[in-house]
Image (tube, rainbow, N blue to C red):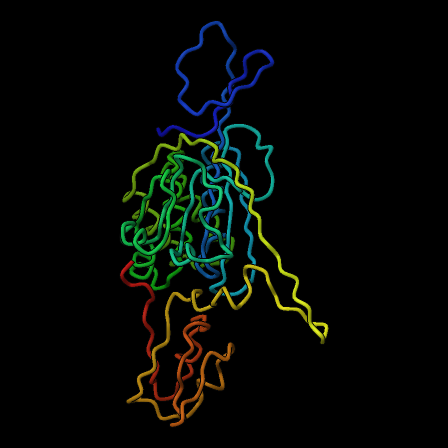
Amino acid sequence: MPLITNYFLALTLDFYILTQPLIVIPDKFLMILMIVRVRFHGRGGQGAKTASRILGTASFVEGMNVQDSPVYGAERRGAPVTAFTRISDSEILERGYVFDPDLLIVMDATLLASPVAKVTDGIRKKGAIFLNAQSANIIGEHYTLPSDVRIASYDLTSSAMEMLGKPIISSASAAAAARLVGLVKESSLEQAIVTELEEIGLSEEMIKKNVMLGRKIFSSLEPLELATEESEKKLRIVPLEMITSNDGLEDIIAVGNSKVAKTGSWRIFKPVVDYEKCTACTVCYAYCPESALILRQDGKPEIDYDNCKGCLICYRECPPKAINIEREVIAF
């Protein structure tokens, strides 16, 4: 059983926060309260909300007190989504967002570069980050990760494509979190997967495939010791510039505006035009909901990958089947 974060020791009326395992204090009344905070970062359509619910339900089956809740942001496929799960052996008095997680589940590593998602903000010292990736070392070469945490990784998307035929990793992410936290048995995880997926109306066949996927991920990882310490609180000061305008409209200066946050990072798959097959029919241009296609002088489309969200409508509607799809970030 791994060490769990945040032990509260009650000695008469005094309270102490312990970050190391408790051994023996004789002749004292001890009350040890445990709480684990997990934060999921994914994109719309990957299943972050369902993953947090599966983890919460599995922990509840084990007799724990739990909370789980999502934050959607832009409610669109590919948009950053955050979800939270708290697990405790006593009443949970906290509410709202998890600002100081013990464990981060990063379902899409490209979110590490997002100025909106702020994936690693607040993670506790000696905490853990799980990356949906083939190699954590490769991720570290492309993105900055905290130095005082442990990193684990597994390619959940490839496993989901193999077993489900879709890049939906709710069950896989929940299984990874359950295994790393170390408080949930495999049987409880399976029960939670069935319960939550039945609730959203999945077929019996798809639920069985998700259970098999959860088993695979659960058995492929090992629990981590989550004896974490509170991170130093850093005041985030953002200088704001007032921009005057004669027509009464001002520029958007928030961190997540479209000049900074290119929505091309929302993709899991990208469309690629085969110009030898393309007949310049412009059907893809007409159907693109994001105006992420422009027409060249020869009438054939060119894709603006900075803003293409990967909805793949162009791929499905192309009459000559001249648009193929490729999975993004294959090297990860």
